[in-house]
Image 1 (tube, rainbow over the protein chains, first blue to last red):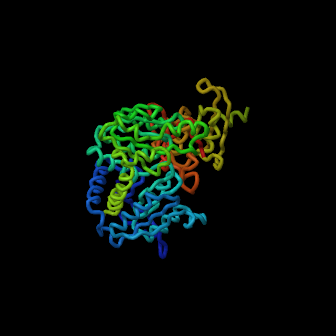
Image 2 (image 1 turned 120 degrees about the vertical axis):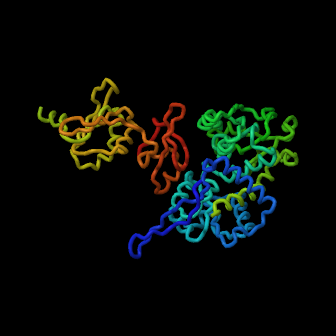
Image 3 (image 1 turned 90 degrees about the vertical axis):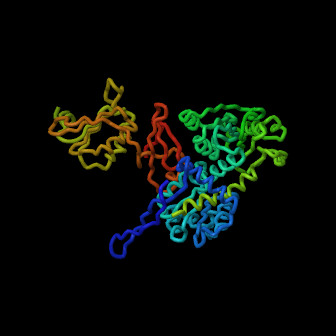
Length: 322
Length: 151
């Protein structure tokens, strides 16, 4: 990671100034963080969990620019900042921003960076966060750019895995559902590659794990298997990571109707699983986890969402660290 | 006869030979030769033992920087670049695919920021088990070298 420095105004001549973006402490992609940086964030999150209310961001203003809606991510980032004594500006809907008038992302970022010390941004276009980080004089935290990256989700997934398993090393992780378009599973593979995992990819043909991630696993000596059925195929797993099978991903709706129930986790399916197994889901869930699982001690997805608060406190603190 | 001589003889300049016939006009586009003021001779669908039908471009009084000619390596890796001075070939320049390619390639992902906002494209050239892939610097999607779209 590059170290944070404020933007500088370089004189071009009398009365003329150009904003030169300086290197920032951005979080755009999980690949930007080394293993050591990931572990440092998780350590810091554990510290914030013991005491989430501090005044370390006193006087700081954080902008949350949500060009598309999000519930958990925006609320947890905003809660994280407020509990650290910082203030929030921003918008939760692009329709209420100048982008609806045709303003470019470049201009929006430059304008907001005049007011805020850091920017948390969700944008529907893939690569928007990387681009913003290149033009912004203040740190950018990617809160999701289209189907590309959502690194704070990945870090909270890692924190949840670490908390429930006591380690990140040598775990067997089953990834279920939309493995083709699901950004959370792609980022999780990349982040877990530091910790010698074994993966099981459970998905219908239409939503199989893309080849580039299988190539990534092979290159990094990560064993994986691919199966179609959910039931009885995760009994050896430590983590069952569920994702939503989205109707709009299917060209053939009859195919969707056929597979959607194959990927519904029911309480009875957890009977023969390992005692330490925990069920994770980035939420929102629809039909892929039956409500009867919620009361099972192996269901961890709501606590996982709570962990997002501490992890985001750690992220915001890191990007604003001197 | 005189016309043939004009085409064949280049006193000073650059000859790009062995361009696959279907890539000739993309090379013209990549090097921005449509805006070039020097004399240019373009031949296409010429017989070639190496590539079947080939194209050739001769540009008079023009030298290209290596990073310019290397852009051609993306679509015509076996093209030959000869630098001519006083009717002599003074340099046979090998083509090397650069590690990063700017501007000339369009991202195949319609939801990429580069296809929706005024952002210059950047691609990282990668070798995936012997297959050359281009990874978009912004949306991180990968595309095979043979499937790239030239802007």
